[in-house]
Length: 150
Ligand code: ZN
Image 1: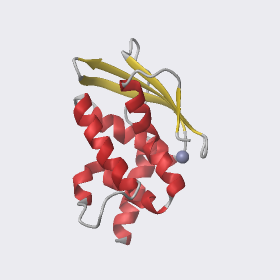
Image 2 (image 1 turned 120 degrees about the horizontal axis):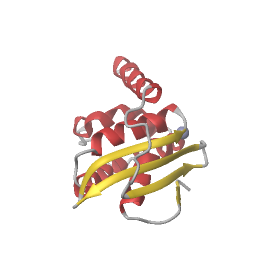
Image 3 (image 1 turned 90 degrees about the vertical axis):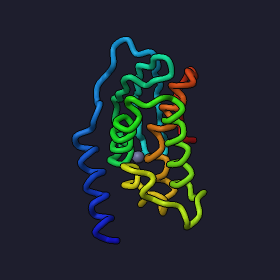
C-alpha cells in the first residue's frame, strides 16, 4: 500500500507542477469561480458546452498541490463527456472522499481519481480535492457568484 501511496503522491505533484488545461477559454459558454477559504485555493473555471456535451474545459488560478492536481485531472476527465456523465463521476467521487461508501466500494472504478484516496483521512483536504468539481457543477448550473467550500 505504501508504494501505491507514493505513486499517488507523485501523480498529484506532477499534475500540480504541470497542470493540464491550464489557460483561459475565450468565449466560454459557462464560467465559475471557486474558493476554498480554509486552504486559500482559488480557481476560475471555463467551459464550452454545446448540446449537453462538454467540448472544452480549462482553469486558471492558484492553490495547494491537491486542489491544483484535482482541477487538472477533473478537466482531463470531463472533456468530451456529457454533463450527465460528468455529474455521475462527481457524485461517485464525492461519496467516496466524504466516506459515504462501504467497504465493498471498488476504488478502481474511480479511475484517475483514485489518486485522491489519501484525502479521505483528512477532512480539510477533501475540500481541496473537490473544489474544482463543485466549481464545475456550479458553472454547469450557471449560478452566479463564487462557490466556496464553506
Ligand atoms: Zn488546498
